[in-house]
Amino acid sequence: MSGPRIFVLSVHFKEDYWVRVQRHFLDLTLRPTDRRLFARFEISDEVFLPSETVVEWDDGKHATALNLLGQLALEEADPDDWLLFLDSDAWPLLPVEELLTGYGDILAVQRLENLGDPQPHPCFTLVRARLWRELEGDWNRGESEFMWLNDAGDLVGDVGG
Image 1 (cartoon, rainbow, N blue to C red):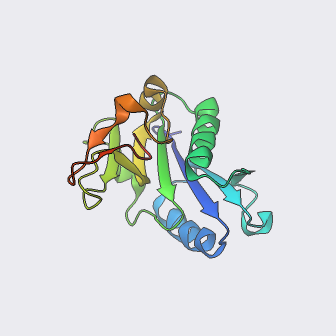
Image 2 (image 1 turned 90 degrees about the horizontal axis):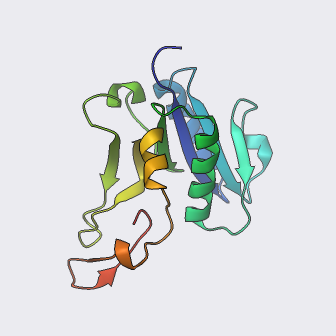
């Protein structure tokens, strides 16, 4: 195998259309050695391929599914492998492998338009498995130590906090 693997982790909620669209772009931008893990909620298993790991979660909460996928990936991932958290309606446009150097151990979308939110957003977060383990990564809403004042002056926490 050449270099670290990429584990794509994506949550699909009630709409199978995005599974097919996302798969099209993942087919164009991933290597055959990379893994795909999906969480589904009220979507048929039939839309997924046998090569894709699919789990169902029952509470319908996005953070629960992201955390479940992260845990599953960490059971298999080597420390230098990468976890790529993607929203179901998000996908890379260039080969993901091109993003693996020059950015450190994490590369993520930051949604500054959400009143200056500083945290990484799970619509696209690429993080080393080693770092996710060290951080004990968790997509649940932050507790008091993970709160901040937003641009409106409100104390908030959010997914990724």
